[in-house]
Image 1 (cartoon, rainbow, N blue to C red):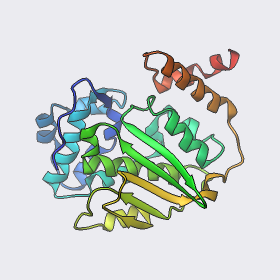
Image 2 (image 1 turned 180 degrees about the vertical axis):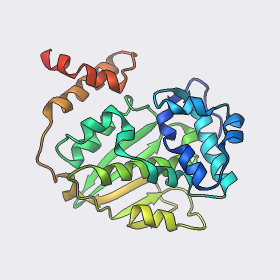
Image 3 (image 1 turned 180 degrees about the horizontal axis):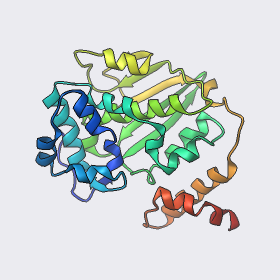
Amino acid sequence: MRAAAVPARRHIRAAALAHYFEVAEAVGLNPQPLLRRVGLSRRMLVDPEQRIPLAAALQLLEASAEASGCADFGLRMAEARRLSDLGALSLLLTHLSSLRAVLQTLIHSRQLVGGTLALALVESGKSTVIREELVEPAAARSRQATELALGVLFRLCATLPGQRWNPQSVNFRHAAPADIQRHRHLFHCRLKFGSEFEAQLQFLRRQCTCRETIAELLEHSVEYKCERLEQDDRKFELDDLFKNQWEVDKL
């Protein structure tokens, strides 16, 4: 599947393609021709804070999956992710009080982490559903980007210290690939393709409240930064958020 055109002004952090080169090497892919084709270079991806065109990132993911014959290329990249790949945000998430607090922080700080991913937390009865939508039309049509994004979210929830992460199901809007072994290996739960929503995780509601330690200062810092971001057009980097968290406490 080829990603449709995305306005040139939309850029994302190179961190979105973390571990691309090691996955490409593992599947026997020479990434240099693909990088040149989409207007990227190895140097551009070394610094996770480097801004790169979203269109190029989407095209690279789809082209890599096609060239390697690995329809699960995006999931392979998600499997390689570590909590530390989130940078300063990982420090905050490991100190939040519960899985619900983690998810709500990700929802409220969406603009801080790139603005191309929308998350929603829906609670009904004994179940909680995390719905994930790639807000750029071209990204939403990219199977690799969708599976990478949901895979990263799943890995994040699974690797946070102190969490009991046992989802009931994972849903995708796109059709199932010919081989879903890697999906089963990563998610360890019921898989549904052809879903109404782009991508979603469903788990028991009680899993949202399983930790007792509360990091109120860090939570308030994020809330403050998000309010400031809504009031004006300035973009706050995550490093800036943590650099100034003590200043926020004094206000």
